[in-house]
Length: 249
Ligand SMILES: Nc1ncnc2c1ncn2[C@@H]1O[C@H](COP(=O)(O)OP(=O)(O)OP(=O)(O)O)[C@@H](O)[C@H]1O
Figure 1 (tube, protein in one colour):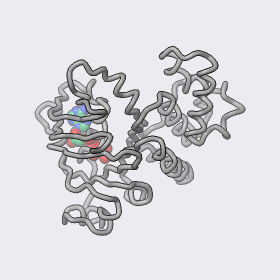
Figure 2: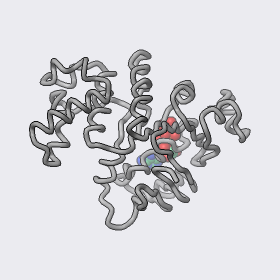
Figure 3: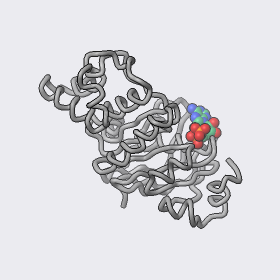
């Protein structure tokens, strides 16, 4: 069993079904990529993994998402706690309009951490996000003064500061230049030693470069889920072959 397992997972926006009957095991300490054409449900599925869809009106979910032996959609589950353990990084870097230090320290401070602990968390999180060397001399400066790629690594550090087990990334490099993208891809390879990483990407080269496992979605269905090599080189389904060889999408 994976670190997260979905069982017969369906999601509806009003009458419209966006994902259908997804059964999937996300493996621990691996990078899993979700690929498929626009509108196939990748982001919707990603967000079901930490209850990010909760706030959307008319959104209804059936089935289960099992994490740590519990269904995260069960009664008495605190979604905030789930989002702490299963963090998320978005497409556009979204640092808070405050200092680099405070971006990282904000949530741990809220959870009661004191100054010395906060200093340690800021340093270790920035190191884990491969940003420390670039910012250690200007922690008091505004996060908005960083480049886009640095801002995204800051957002990754902010997620790491909450000590998650899983990091979800929704097209986290699509707004970045190639060098910043490369740095984050490199970083993901490091992150999976400590965390489990699930990414949505439009970039098939990116999936084939960095993912251990790849899931191909089409119109809300999980068509095929396998090692990245099998998906790209030897897929079982014709639809997967058509997609990865560029025949549609
Ligand atoms: N808040 C919402 N309300 C209603 N429908 C939605 C909502 N969010 C997404 N959808 C619909 O659900 C389907 C899946 O969308 P989703 O964003 O998950 O796809 P995607 O594969 O991530 O697409 P893209 O690659 O373009 O980001 C689409 O038909 C979309 O229009």
